[in-house]
Length: 146
Image (cartoon, rainbow, N blue to C red; front, side, top):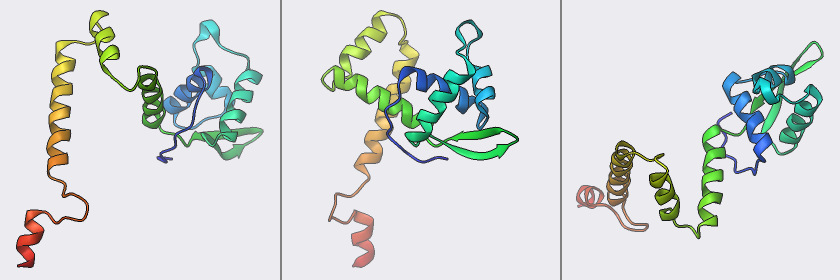
């Protein structure tokens, strides 16, 4: 289930996927019942979207209980979110600055968030500096070979 797939999902398909991620696996009826009551689509509408998701290899039929198929997600929440974020960044020419500025201006990015991001960036930078360049041995490798 933890396959990393980059599948383009519509907003409605993503909403269906969120319901399925919440329950882990379930029938069309269980998925439908997880959707917001105010604007809950008809059973047949959810069924159609689940079939589309199946065609896209975003979900699969796990088993059949009575007349109901049980579906499970094949796309992780993380990979779906990464795809959305990457598409959003592409619309800004690849730069995160306009997005970060907007988040800061609207109060959706706090100082605490920035500190966490700074720590993550420092960790990524540290991890990258400890990786040997392709075709080169790191110091510990070369010492052990002498």
